[in-house]
Image (cartoon, rainbow, N blue to C red; front, top):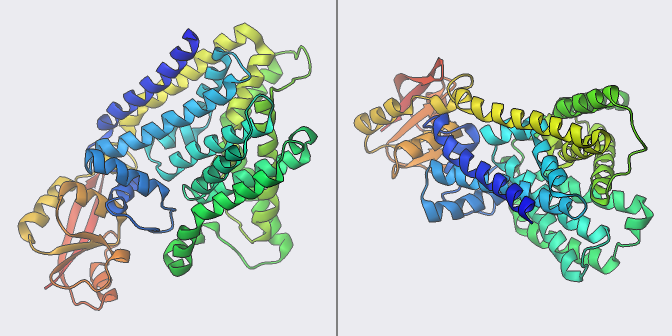
Length: 460
């Protein structure tokens, strides 16, 4: 249909625009981009606290287009476009093109997608895509109209395993979908025990080797566990802190969605009780089941600090559901109003993205060119070792071919080494490797509107 082609074309055009627009945001790399450039230069079963799938995909794109900003932006925007197309395809089974397309645009109600995914994120972008792939596959299995075979269950299991190694919190999504399916008779009747076993087996096959790497490198793989702020306190205290933080994270993540629902509910009269389409019912059931698992699991494990981005694989479905509910409640006039508002949100975001690269935090406007020129001129034969992935990635971009390493990846380094540290501890960094190092002073690095000092030391 012509309308379908128009929406698909709009999604692809937006991705191409964002790919070109990346260059307007600054010549250097954000934190996640720098990490991807550093690790995706080589294949490994694991790298750090992040799961490996994004780095594997990025390595493939590097092989085709080289290690540069274009390849970094291409992968991310291709994944965002694929995520939008997956959601559109799933909803088109039940909704006309305008409603399905507007529900996709409704993802702009989520700042983690409207802003952070386009500005800085990498692994979370892949998590968005995998979450929507898992949901699309599950929707075809659990709702009528889809052709169900054992291969379909294997595909779902593979997607679930790949989702987990895109971002660990995606592992909750298949559990939430299964929980929702078990609680509703029509979905429970479509669960095939053989299919479930095959799906589980496929997921475990995907997870086997990355899981083996985690067990052998638990210190590196668990480096970000401190963010959970796990406390050993009384159960009531943990429950109160964990549930409070979880509730705040939901509100922060869904702030614009909640605002939209409140405005529409207070300014319109419902013509009838809302009857969501089958895809919306599954998304709602999954969100409720996922919220239940989080509410029980996080406090019981002592987690007292929940970041809103951790909710992404579960909570992102709230936006398209809210848009579809609004369309059903407000009819044609409301659809035009909503379309205009969502278009304004997306246009505002793209207008502000170049500004974000040049003000706080200003990572893409950092002055790495003078630092790279000084390293090349003053220490041409020394390996460069740093405690900052942001510095390592940007120096690799500026000095292709130089031996530049992160501290965690440089055991047994010999010969002259130039040590760089953001926290003024270059000599201490050298001492961690049993090396003496002479201070070389600090090099000023302009970052957006502020100046950052990079401490430097040299081991002969």
